[in-house]
Length: 424
Ligand SMILES: *Cc1c(COP(=O)(O)O)cnc(C)c1O
Image: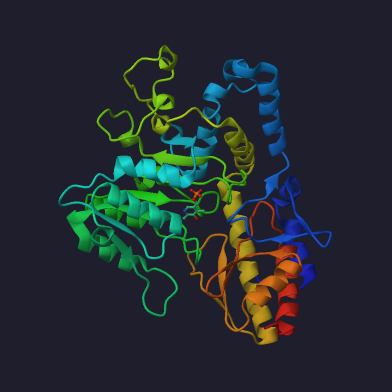
């Protein structure tokens, strides 16, 4: 398709957009009385209008039924989370029994590492990407220390090549090969939070499994964004948060995937609690733990219903639309944004550098040579919500559910005006 940097062209793309009705399903913040152009769905997705009804229902049931709500609420609380498994499994490419909802992302990764990082004297190394999301780095270091090991000797980071902004799959595969039977765990961000790169999860998983390691994925930036086939790829485990591309609200419940081959095992290491035991006998309050046959075996506490209800609301949208349509729109709108950036770059003779490689999802990370934070601030004051990462990068992530092509065009015009002001 031949793109044009005009309002009329952007509007014509919107007119053909078969997801256009969904924009009105979301609440947009306003700046200067106008709805913002929102590029930070990769950080906190917008609030769907339908979410309130899901939360209100729980509040009403709690008020009217109190403890009886566990069994007699409109959606009884004791198995509320089970409603999420089937739709969520479709989003991540899993079987419904491989998916559960609980806690928050870093907590879940810790719990999954308890099960899937069991170092021995000879096989103890962890492979991750360099400059992983800080929470993941703290997690790795503390897990390694917990096992009495030295982080410096245990955590191996895959580097980017000098002068390059992305990781090369061949370098990752080479490292896996090199570590061989010392490698206990590969745990990488499926989509990198900084440069927006989509890792070749299938190939990397296969390579990790081939040397006998466990392979897990942090899917914070991948879920609801790119195609995932966790089951077919034969990943051992994964976890993700739900508040980025899945629009479930600040700090709300996280999801986990545990491959079917690890379910129904008694001898697996796991931190356990009453919500992981068989629900048929849970309330007999027996002393011995009998794991649920699905990924719910990793649940520890009873489910935080007010944190899961918005996630269920969000999943109804994913059910209606399906990942395929979201991915189709995502590809087109991100290409259009890329085109706009190049056009503006030419018009104002600035020097933006898109550091996101071809393998990408919703996010374009743009290195602003020259003008930095002042331009970011100008965008914000003029209704464009992006985010800033050191040293000089803005991240732009249109969300296929609610971003329009017109947003991309208008963003370009605001960006151009900002650059021409030559802010220091
Ligand atoms: C957003 C994000 C997190 C957030 O972790 P929480 O435990 O939900 O606070 C972790 N890892 C990555 C890669 C992220 O992008």
